Image: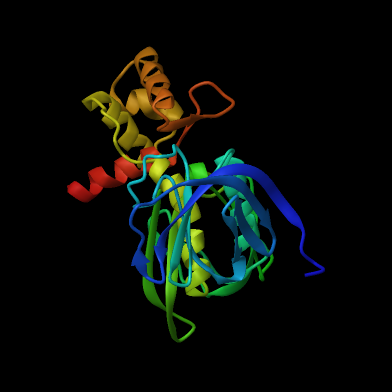
Length: 287
């Protein structure tokens, strides 16, 4: 493996929870080294060394969306290769996960439709080839037409994975809601091998879970939120909702603190974050 290069080498803990398709009883976490290259994930302990070829990894689930009820460690990710599943808990899980997703996805070619939906309106856009670029907390998609689509994980509002028709074939499609440079809600569709879509889904769902719609808003706060979602300029909100400027700015401050709004450079110029878009979308769906 002359082109193999090291990406991470740290201490950690790990355990195999599924072996040959069967759940393992009497789990015992092992301590040792967790090594990652652009080719392999290596789990080394006093009991031996397990090497996992990245090309054979079919799914990755991080500690925020993994279904395993494991409390022996505070942070971990699961890796499935064939009919085996391992849980891995590196010392610095955030940095290690970034290296892992980069090794698994960076440079891979997928099909992209962007924007498939813009401002709630379905666009007549063709599928194009695109190349994945993984940076810190950002998924980039370099599309053949020349555009570069950036999806910030903290800006992801909703994620859906389904089967769909792509260029005449039934394929797995990942639908990701986020905003463009102007702050407009858009959906980017991504398709590829089931492996690529599964791993990419795990990555972007980190942002979706961070933006869960669990805020407790009162009536006036909801009115301001819905006005922003409807496209009313932040500067026109006081007149639109019939409130004085100071009261509206106090609501802006509260919504910024809740992670629902993002404050821009100018005072009272704000933009809905993914969490705010989800709340407004839920309200509209219930009407």
